[in-house]
Image (cartoon, rainbow, N blue to C red; front, side):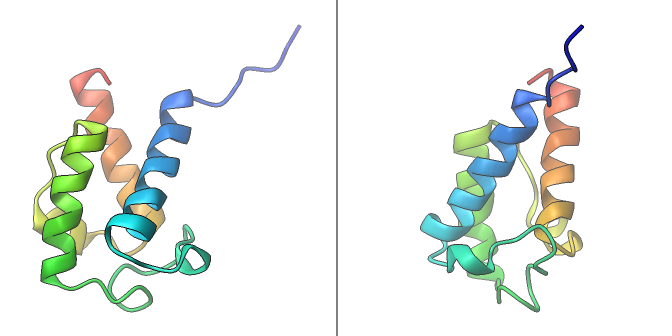
Length: 91
């Protein structure tokens, strides 16, 4: 019997979010880790968050508010918010 594989949607969220942070927001991919704090470590400001909101909606089909992003302390927290929204919309 084979082991269950990880949720491919989770990998997609992980990969797309890191791509958005690195490419759309011009952050160093080396700094975009799960434990990286969005504001303190990555330096996200309101302009970057607004760009991120649009990119997340376009690429992952999830509508987030700027507040939800600011309330996510780390990249991993933001991934979890996105995953929970995808689960609600059936993505």
